[in-house]
Length: 241
Image (cartoon, rainbow, N blue to C red; front, side):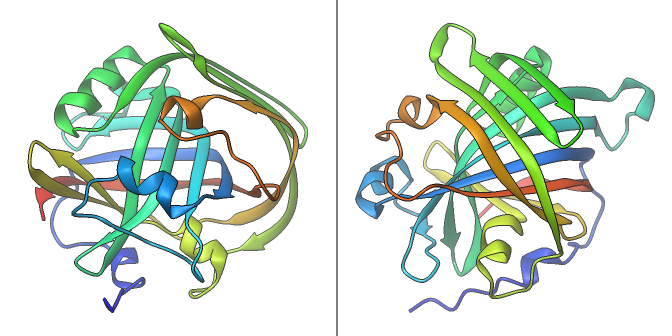
């Protein structure tokens, strides 16, 4: 049994950040998924990370603001919509995320992330609107219209920062990512204050990103849904595990 430290990754690493971002108005939609469905899609060097014996896949649409490398001024930073599809893994006892796909409305951001971060970004047409506590969000991958998401949701009660050991902390407070470059596993880290979590209610959800990633459409109980107004993020460079 591997001992997993879920607190150490929440601390800021030493050294200079490679870049800065602001993540705003994040929706977290999570489904319980059989391990047998996900295991073939994740590199074998990564161990699936379960909570009370359950594996989760998460869909996270949000706003990216102020995206820039450390040396660039705020005036040239990028703002765009992004949606990621992910599951949870650990490597050498460190818990993180593995991305099946990431959609972004910025072509430049897609190319930069594919080259520099070895992440499966896709250029998409994306829209978002908010009226009061109700948000509508849509993304359609260019050249692959079935890889799409249409979601409408309503914000709920404040929960605040998640307590370590809870399901919310397990799902939301993830600061490491793992990706593969050839035969090499790379590790990236971000730092931010804990998410100001809220409950959220799905009004409608239509999505094809899960199936586009090679999994069957989610079945079973309704998904878990959370929201966070946002955090300011320091991004640290990828390094080999």
